[in-house]
Image (tube, rainbow, N blue to C red; front, side, top):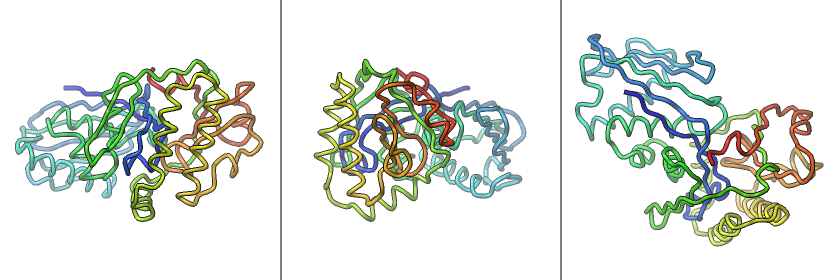
Length: 300
């Protein structure tokens, strides 16, 4: 059996999606595969490959006790054991055949922050039948927008309303998308740490109305200058409330256009809306070599 899930990009609502802000999320053309084959080894033989088809993690577990017989990473194997154990609480026969060979393969760099965890959880959910949002909440305590992206064929609006998910698929395909680029900041952010920090800082509904309003205006925006004004306003709100400097002010204050952080500030990808020429050379001159145009990353 083979399963696949999309990665994700959160265009609006970073951090505040956790508290109920209406947010714009986009599935990516990149994702993760999960393939399962049975054998007679009585072992769960797990191998994870990166986008270059190189092994980045490998372990062997006893199929019944989940005792680790071999692991290239104690930390990763412990998380894997916990995942399997939790799924077995819901589906007692999960991975209890005579043995299994399980391979995962990312089609994106695992440091990009596109959802190596959410795509794995969604694939395991497809295989086991366990609710992916329940798995996600148990292990990552996120909003769940990344799970919504995993099987979506289009952009979507996502909101948590009294802990209930509101998901609406939309066609977000701005006419100026050729002027939009995603740039990797050469640094992977720890989502779990960022979520914990935000929940400790912001416990009220502050900022929710403003961020939600910007999301509504962005999805109907037909003019790039208006779009740039909106993402600048979004940056100002988030910067003030989480007490972090805007990425444009910090690294790209001479950029001709606007720049917006995506997801956890300080790493992963940013979105650049360039007013004139293709900004690839600009970002590469500053040491940021992964520059993707909108259609190279977003699943539209």
